[in-house]
Image (cartoon, rainbow, N blue to C red):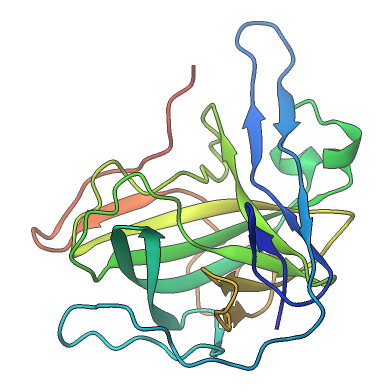
Length: 252
């Protein structure tokens, strides 16, 4: 079981660190782009909690949540429920489809990195999310993290300008029940960390659901796939059966 903190909430029983989302920004004009990481948070506790049953969350009739602690592989789907806030419950089908390692030299050319950021290893994770609940989740952050070899829970990074290789955006402004979106999320594992698993863990007491598999080099062909990692974001409206384009964000 991994441990760590999500923002200011303790998520794990042992000494571990959360690496918050790194807010990456690029300057316009001739200025060199800069990356500005937010402060990190470390939380600890003395004992590992006993595995708990799936918490009571109201879900639509016919929806069955995946058991806490499930260890899944790439391509497997988990049905999860979580408290988005005090008044909003999110219910999603999450399918993690790809995990890729890259380098700053390969994917972040032109971005200025400070010493802390330069020690991190960048990863791209692709996943498909389907809204199985009764609430519009528009604008919410995809609730996935990665776990590195030091049991560090790492949030996905966000960008204030468009990052074409892997946009790492929130859910679209409108993400209604029945909608499905694909997202490519950027994760920066600190101190030369390695991606061990992708994790859904919305609260401290939640025994995480994880996805594991081969982490391939960016551009390498995964067995069974027609091509290497694509890196884009897509949105579909299953109720209408039509695509509605990507959500890569605009350049300021």
